[in-house]
Amino acid sequence: MHVPFCRTKCRYCSFYSEPIAKHDEIDVIRAMLTQMQQYKIPDSIKTIYIGGGSPSCIAESNLFEIVTAVKKYCPNAKEFTIEINPGQANEQILNRLRKAGVSRISIGAQSFIQSELNFLARSHTVEDIYEAVMFSRAAGFDNINLDLIFAIPYSDLDSWKQNLKAAIESGVEHISAYALTYEDKTPLVRDLAAGLFEPICEDTDRTMYELAIDEFSKAGIEQYEISNFARSGFECKHNLNYWANGDYLGIGPAAASYLQGQRSVNFAGIGKYIEAIKSGASAVELSEILNERQRACETAVLNLRRISGIDLAEFKTQTGFDAMELFAEPIRNYKKLSLLDSDKQRIFLTRRALGIADSILCDFAVV
Ligand code: SF4
Image (tube, rainbow, N blue to C red; front, side, top):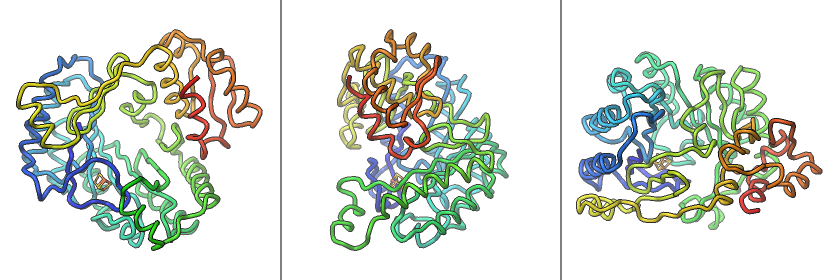
């Protein structure tokens, strides 16, 4: 469920979201619930994820309208995550979310250093992050994620260590850590082009990433995907399905779906989205059916993001292809560089490869 609103726009963000103050959120929410009803949602749906945007910036009554409706449609979901921004969910709301069946809270912390939050134009304080964790715990959540960003301009290894320490000491079960990326048309990229700051150099970026893997591991929070770390048993089931190239259904403006080899994206503009739903039409703007080979390539790229990599037997059952044969050339090339390895059961990236995974994965995207 993509809730397409934010209170303010963060400097680096390229996700589709609209300023909440300029829209009547209820129209979009009702359209989202109608879109959900257009699908025959099977009882077997295993996970729910309400993200955005910032679901926590909408009115409490509207948030609960979504939560209650989704829960009713997916009664057997084993994991139900909602994203909150620090400073936007108080103890009472978190208590209500827990009682309504939400099982996992994902907190957009990004940094425990106020100057870094200011640089990113985040709308919250460091104190708000601690409060969000505390309120979530008090409400009974035993599965909490924190998002962190590294390689922020003006940061260094010491400030990153401080962030890692704070994240570990917060006691959360799951951490997602991403390098700051420079996405087209964001204020961040415009300011970079104007020479307002220097980006962090590649070597420092890489060292920060390596530090995260080591420090989290020492704390019992193991890496299970390129950017994701969890205590045992707290790996995010919803995201594991993405990396397995499983089916998913996206509801809301700009939300993406992948159902039986068909990839689709909903209208991004709120107006067009609501109009399509109100007229009884589909809110899907673009869709594409992948052929079997494309599906296999996509599965490999996603599987290789997992530390466990491609499970050869699972891959064969899912795609009909033998991964060792289909990807013989990139496997051979990257093995020579010690960036990839394989055994009888799987193909996986080596530790050296993880920091440059994107450039390796493109060679599996088309074969
Ligand atoms: S809160 Fe999240 S979705 Fe909204 S602008 Fe910031 S990064 Fe983007």
